[in-house]
Length: 323
Image 1 (cartoon, rainbow, N blue to C red):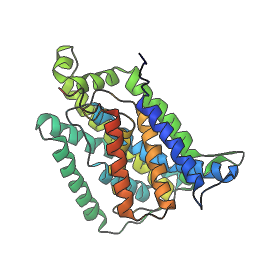
Image 2: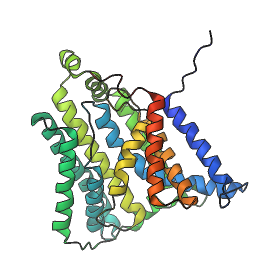
Image 3: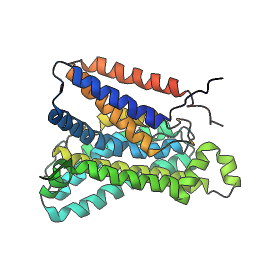
Image 4: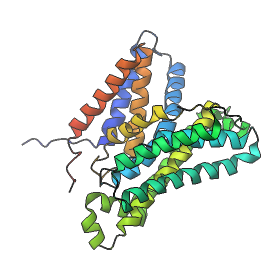
């Protein structure tokens, strides 16, 4: 009998990314056989995938935690932390570190409130985070009255949006993402918190009987997810240099989709951040390809949704661990 060859979802996502990139080069206005243009395009796509990938890190944690975990407040948190960073920095390099700390802390606070509402008040993650999204959006409008005055610092542009150096034409954001990816791998695979997170995602009753503090592991997952989303907002404003009230919303659905495309079980208990990174690259490439083909926004949304459904169907495992 022939043995079935099973490809891990992160590898499958990376292979799909390669196929999409090759296809983009074959288009009339693609890079063709010019390697310099191909490298520049690949570098730009990876740089754009960074922000989606970092924002999706928080979704990875709450989805792995199980119990239908999801964070629909992520888009609003990105906007809020980006605005706070923009206002606090005001063009001064000396203000970058305090603004960074505030962005992380505010994101963590919102995430903790989400986690406590879900854990103690038994509110559905969908309802709790959706409601928090509305609260945060309303707070943004009230605090800023629609007007935001500020400026990002030169060091943020240099570290996030520009190449590392003239001799190393790699955007700083990509290097930051690689380091971030290693730290996420260590968190999930080499810490007690990471092991407990997978345990509660598989079966919370069994995890509790095994000595896992399910309550605070779940709250910690949402708090850390909020902090990582805040970090995403900090990076995003450092790249764009501007803020507006809907800055983070376009990243909400793709962040969840990137987690699913990367092979993380939507029922919890199994997944990797490497898969999420691969999923972010796939979605960024797909968006770039559709934009190059001058497809309308409605078609892009349909293709992205269809791709997500197709990949989840191929993996065929999204409910296998639900208890």
